[in-house]
Image (tube, rainbow, N blue to C red):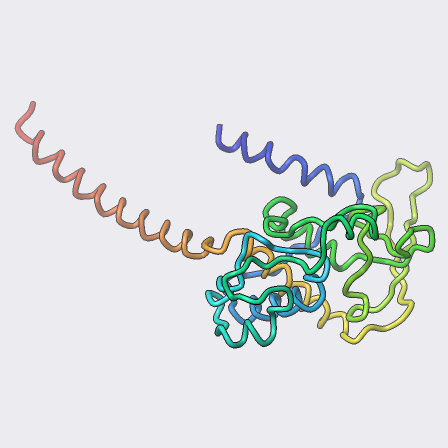
Length: 241
């Protein structure tokens, strides 16, 4: 029953990926990598916080990824005055909706709802589209309202979607072209996106690593208790024929 419920939860993600027609790349994130989490927090504060919040995480919670209070105040607190405040964007949702047509969503649980693979691929598949209002489109999320916030790092790319003859002869072919270079190489940009996705995955469940570690210990203890319970059972029933 549990497997069926989990499968139903992932149906929307599969539908989204298949609707876009673009294969998702595996995200190499690891929420135990504190260096990666710190880099992801920096990227989020510099490039994402202007529009998106992660209001279920407080600035003080970033101390759990190895940052000091001074580092948080000096480098990440652009939209708050107190360390205990939630990480919220700097402008009102009403203004955002007027500017973009839709209010940018809070990203506290986006890695859990969309999946790390979806996010990792999405942030690496923006391309220039003169027909779009923002001038940008996305291979994973067609007709996306969000412009490419990281284009200065990745550069500008074009995309041509080539459909096989007959129109239904299988998956289309995606041909990427470089329009202009960004500040980072392709490998460096992928690493930056990995760190950002890693941070968003951490924000979605900050205690995931501890939960898994505790789970392993609990299973070990239960295994030991099972041995003692079995020996006790044999002792009680040894005289029963």
